[in-house]
Image 1 (cartoon, rainbow, N blue to C red):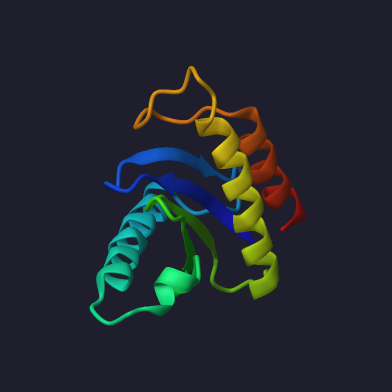
Image 2 (cartoon, helix red, strand yellow):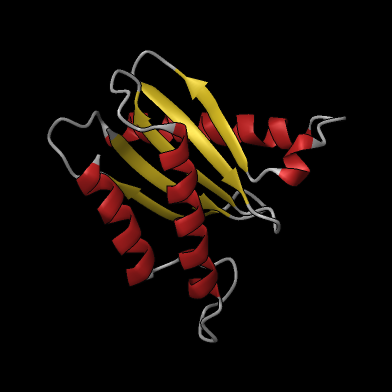
Length: 140
């Protein structure tokens, strides 16, 4: 089950965060803490010397697994990072479904920042990004 979607810019500033609104979801602060740990691991994975595969593949894969949560990440060419936090016990999301979600989210993100009224570095508020995230939350 998908619990959280977040977008960070290249300087690790949070641009977008949506938590699944469900009574079964754990405390939001625990999910956010796990998300910050995942952000650190993504930075280490990207900045690891000799890691040339990151330059060709945007999907970073599974970053962190705990007893309650699992995180996945996607890196754009500009250094923007997309994160997905899921429930560790539920294995309903497949790797190809996560890749497809991230590619769709990336397309909607590009549309949102192409808006001439958007100021880079400011929080994102896009109905199209919200729709993609709500669709993911509804389906999983």
